[in-house]
Length: 407
View (cartoon, rainbow, N blue to C red):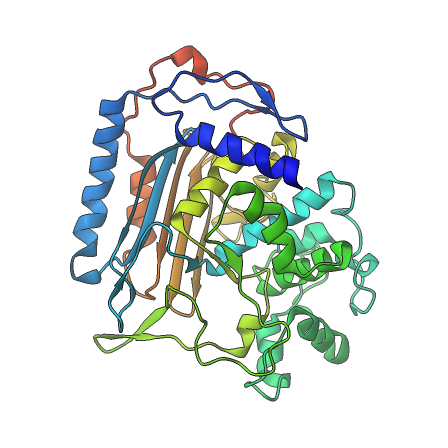
């Protein structure tokens, strides 16, 4: 682990400080990927872009309409990041770029990344029946790929838990969820691979598969293989493994808030927070920028593997305007946009990547009310504040670092 950790840290600092430096020579990681931070930016255009984005969020933050943190990147270069408002409306503590937010469903991309890493190591077969890894699972023909693309047809574990988990003061873990399915065998919505239905059960089960393969708790695997190598020091997967009762609140710096009338109130912890994979990742805007750079420069998985994450998992599905890859929603109206949004217990998260233009916008909030996503899409699509790159020929990417596009 340590050689890869050191390599990733070196590459991270090279990427972060590359905006005003000449391109560096190709380097090889432990997995033999060519990493080429091709960023040499005109400082004036970077400043103007950053000031424009800052003006939008400063205006929205007045009166705490927007309360959270934001990061914007182009071609792997961090153009802007900042935090606005309070981490806790009761104590009036301020947010910072290192404050960890609950990502809600945006957590799914970390479960998918974990699965892709195991796949590259030859430990996980996308098309294997998951009973290969989870013998007690009561349904056949459900594969890992179907979990990741939401084509398993399985019913919602939250509905099952509401009916069958009798003591809501006791945390429910991923293993408890699996046991409930094995005991009660709720009727699926449809047969495997016969439709598309976005369902948290899929990614909670994916975490179970990862634990079965590695012999590690899912939280520990993500920390050791993603957070630590990338220097995501503010990040963790919240779980309640070993807890006998549900705590009053999740003990974390950034509290989720909901509104009763005009007053924000902290959201209490609950038994479902013990299930991970579909949710549960806490991370800062600073750390998510590092994760986005790892995607851009193929630090965790190869470009070929990452491309599959952005491929439509339901190419013939027409009922919804958006499709789903491995941990990412694919925007049907555009050829190269992948995104994910999340809402859970007073937190909201928005992660948008325009991969053809190589733009990323990440927005985190600890309020259940705030600006809508259309504002964020408009920022990503803006062409009136272009970043000027000083050496256009260096914008050509190597064969191992093509811009990611959906198919």
